[in-house]
Length: 311
Image (cartoon, rainbow, N blue to C red; front, top):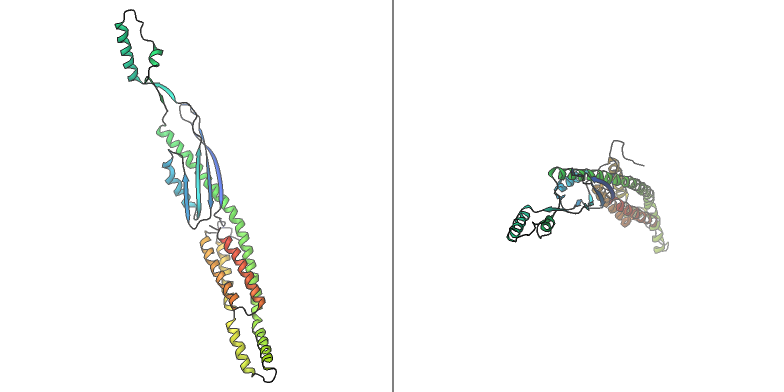
């Protein structure tokens, strides 16, 4: 059984999942940190397609995150979702200085114009419309940078988890693909042995057919019979297809042993497997060889389906 070399990176699947929880540091005003979670999923794809879903205010980190993913992934449809728990603190009430000064001045003018009137009271002034307003604390540049750094670090950790998940699935794929290649190699060996018996079987069938047709009254010259058998054998010779199939098997094992992102090349190679199996079935001159060819096609189809999962 062929396996990856120790120095080569393991085979990777395009299917994987990872989740990382983290905490955005709190501000200098004593505000608590914000919990966040990254979820990364990847499935099969012809190329690399990365989709990032970020909450408002964090769009600035998207280019760096996308660059990090592109540097470590080669194929697959990848979706990355960031969820941040928002602060539940109520907005602060603050005084509008200009509105308060204007209201106070008007209140004092009115009080001065009314003999014995008491001076304006603070609670009465604060109750006037426009004196108080709500204010949400804005993050400083340092706080924004701290938030972005925490989110980016969480993404890189989730990316590591996704890669580990894809490699674990890749190890299972490697075992499945190797087993299928072994099965195809065994069927090819049986087909080679069966193909070697075809010329003699064709000669016997042809001689039997001629004897039945001529009723034993005339005999066909042995040289003529040999010519016909040779012609039939040439048309049904599948040794070239089986030799090419053997070469494809060696190429597939070499790809698996390389440990690289070989998914596209492996998919192209399985198309060549299919071509040889189809030709074998069309040139077969015996029922046993046809059955072997059909078994080959079934095994190659399973190989093709599994190869479509490789990065």
